Length: 211
Image 1 (cartoon, one colour):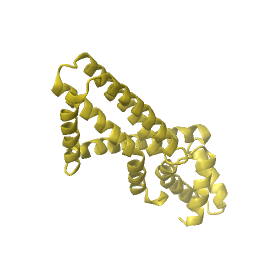
Image 2 (tube, helix red, strand yellow; image 1 turned 30 degrees about the horizontal axis):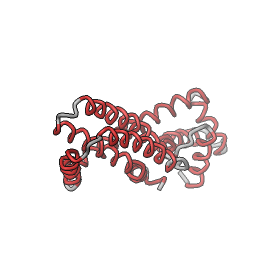
Image 3 (cartoon, helix red, strand yellow; image 1 turned 90 degrees about the vertical axis):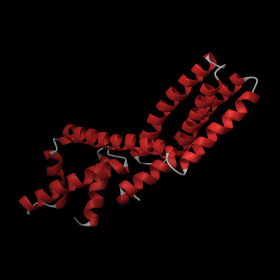
Image 4 (cartoon, helix red, strand yellow; image 1 turned 45 degrees about the horizontal axis):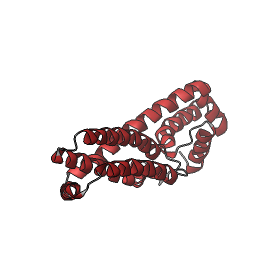
């Protein structure tokens, strides 16, 4: 299909509440194919008329919304895979060295800290700051996948940092458990900080047409 027609379809999708570029990219091929089929079957129709008829074949606004929801689910699945890959990368070279270094730093630093509760509060404060910063960084990004990834990661970070930190407060005498909890929490914060940039880059690789 000609680029001008694809641009019209993109605007039409935006008009019908498909505002995110990556969701448009998932949907546009199917919708463009439906329009092309309509043009072949009814050559007497204008492009705009074929567009409207294709929309009606999707079930009108209600059916179209169902298709949009299914498309967003596909993007969400890619989001979970992307987050998983980001976390697993810290277990492979060269990022594994960074993970080991975090554990080593906390191994030597923790015995020097008298009021470890302040460090726990520091982690909670860092979680809030990173969450707010990520949402601010993505406020003008019109891509669904990075925003969804940060929302999911916010939940993961709060569960997987807040929970272990409470466990740490209850078991401060166990040095190695404390090292694991602090290193683990630090790693999740680092991934969380990097997530907006990583997800935007990965989304542009998945959907080069929106780059």
